[in-house]
Length: 188
Image (cartoon, rainbow, N blue to C red; front, side, top):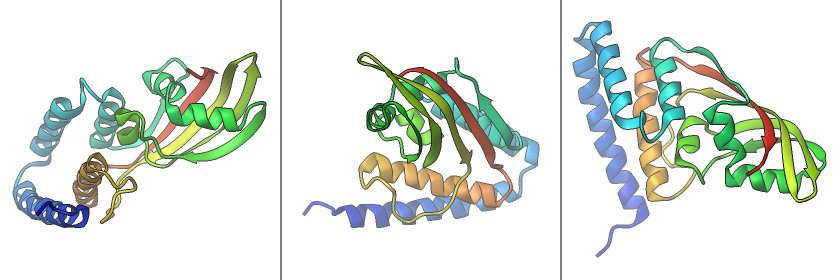
């Protein structure tokens, strides 16, 4: 008999919880510099090539948090302007100002890098092209949630990773990062 989504999530939460307990035991006995070095190695292995925006946010979080601004010409700004979520938002708000919360699903890097961010801006239509000027703001931090926002296998995996990162944040190993992305250009 196939496993239900609820059974899958429960199994994965238990596995993640056990792994987190073991990690806490191991980490509390290590010098902070060693833990930080290992976190950077894991971030490089998991995110550097496939998820460069997330890689940058985690690196900043490991290094003590603070603020991080992505300029209009950054990979983050380009990815946001090329996302399906921005296209829909721009189409709904053509020739007007808007403020909206966004949950990225179409781009896995954006889904990891920004979690229910807020975009404030203006959409101008020129023929069939839509141009956005504005700003995305978010805080890169972690919270514990039993259920993912997106009830799918990738959503569940992302939530489980977020829960493990929440534990690291509670231990002081990760710090929140205030994010700003300046947006100016055509929506792709």
